[in-house]
Image (cartoon, rainbow, N blue to C red; front, side, top):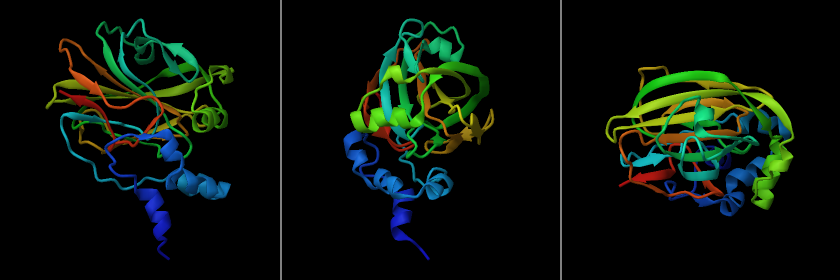
Length: 256
């Protein structure tokens, strides 16, 4: 029997979907409330692994979120000096990407909650330049329930809860956007329990805004990185920490 409510929860997002929504508002919505109401077997087998159908909004001077989840940082960073919190341990952008970039980078970091869709979607239209699995990154990995309690209840990140070091799988997908003449790098970090990231794209593949790139099994963190290189980018950051975003739908940067 067709369940209209279930279909709505699995496939729909709040409108206007291209705008981020405050975390407090998302917590009152169907996605979070319905997920909480499910028995554990239904949550694990159906809700967590859902792959919703989405019609992407094709606007070429916008860069979209690759992930569903809570924004934990957004802005312009020096790749060697500014420290990002990657699952509880401080890293520079160059350390996360294992590069030696000298240019500033525009970055959005997203925490994927257990209630979030775990598909990674293309933030731009272009060609896949690189798909690479990096050596595991040693981090003080968070337990999902404690991290989510901080984010979803207290609206905070508690570094003191990240007590133990684990090795986490990292996957990088780099896309060249010929329209805006920029490289866009997506970094996915898997959770300690499974460490499994499934790739749907190979080097040389064409991709468009909103197309599926990866599925992060029990992942809890992702980065979108845009290096400035020789071109000084004039970007507007249109998301803030504690915003909730939807992969392939929510605009995170606007190119002027």
